[in-house]
Amino acid sequence: MKTMNKLFIIGILFAVLLIPSAVLAAELPDLTGHWAEGDVRELVAMGAISGYPDGTYRPQNTITRAEFSSVMGGALGLADLPNATFADTAGHWGEGRIEALVQAGVIDTALYGQNYNPNGAITREEIAMMTVRMLGTMTGATDIPFIDNDQIGAGYHGYVAEAYGRGIIRGYPDDTFRPKGNATRAEAAVMAVRALRILGMTDEVPTIVSFTADFESIFAGSTATLGWEVTGATAIAIAPNVGAVSPYGSVEVSPAATTTYTLTATNNTGSATAQVTIDVTPFGGIIPPPNGFILPPPSIASFTVDREILPQGQTATLSWEVSGVAAVTIAPGIGEVSTTGTRAVSPAETTTYTLTASNASGSVSETVKISVARQVVIQPGPGVGMDTFVFNYSQSKNYGTRKDLQVGTDKHIGMHFTARALLQYDLSSIPQNAVIVSADLSLYQHRNVDGEAFNVSAHQIITPWDYLMATWNNQPHYAKTALGTKSVTPGVTQWVSWNIRSLVQDWVSGSTDNHGLVLKKANELAYTQYSAIFFSSRADSPGVRPRLDITYYLP
Image (cartoon, rainbow, N blue to C red):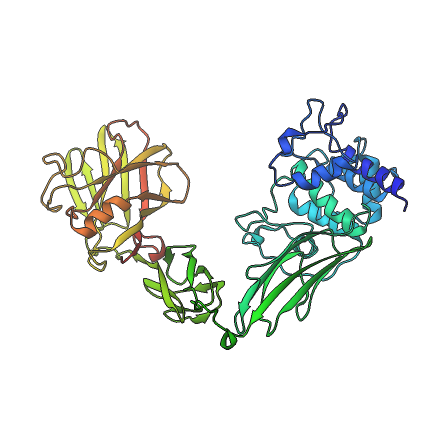
């Protein structure tokens, strides 16, 4: 394809990204410093795209499925086709271009059903699908390194893996891909350009953005890390002894002698190369200069962990970087490591990890601490401890063991019923020096009589009292300020929870006496002829009994 024809196709490709009245915007000031600036400005310089009439590009604006379909159709030079596979594209301005993509196999119709929703914002996983199918071939890639890959829709996993492996898509700095996120004008343009470069439709050989080594001079037996980033390549390889690699990444090398590494990136247009040389000096062959030679001690640039508080059984990642010639170890349980790297750890208890870097001139150390959080569920059985039901009938008390814990009010034959619940949990199993991360008091609402919505409030009991002897109205047995209120909806089965972390911390440390909690209707005097009663399962099933879920760690 001649250059003029290629530029014509690219012009069609990106025209849809602009509003009809778009004019050339040479400066596009809102791109300055933007992550997509380089790719977009390259296209501007080619005359392929322009900005809005006010001279901006608006890279964060979203793009619809119809607009991106026009992008893809223009890239492939497809003629519009009549008829519509999708029910909702008939008569739409993009009908012909969308149908052309369907017939060319660029749109995977099995992922949409009867409707394409042409005016809806296209997602990042949809762009991955269309750009991969535009290339026409699959490499069989399966690696998806993003931490949110479980959010990728059914049928899209292969396309996302392929687009990642071929350098069309990348993750965000937090290692997510956000597959359901709406694609922006910047993202759509950059991903489409990357696919065009792979096809060789931009008259551009691959771009080697970077190819570096963290150490260009090492002692024999030490390691250096090669890092690279390439765009627009169908194949990338590093020689000697590394082989095929992905469009961006890193690899550790330990050459026995001074070595020049060559990265070669190719596409349908041509190839590009870059080189880095790592000088290797035999450690035992150093000849000191006349004024003496002093090997500088190593330096620990960083030693960190991504999660300082870790739930029991889960993993955290240690990361480190050491400068200078050094033997590096991490204790406990890891041993010798390279000068830079990461390691996943899953300590069974709170652990302090120590990194030590040493050479003939001395050693340095850094530590990081991972506090392992333990989880405990306190859920006594019916009639155990102080998990009990309290009932007030016409200002007289009635305490007893019932099938349900009840909270609320009722009015029957002119008399006012009041039901409250008393809960007290034994926290003696938790060490006094424990740091409480979370504490949730949860009750399961399994039925609600008659149908009035109301709020249930939780109160700290602040004085000791005998629930078998005391009346509700003759002593200040609970605090005036509620710990929190929760809405109760009639006819709903649900867990209702209160966050009482601060109170549990005070109970465990001993700064506040543990006399338990009272649950009551927020306004017991506001009642009608209808019942407003919350029933929490008491004996039917242990799995839904009132519970206190606590997560803590020992400092």
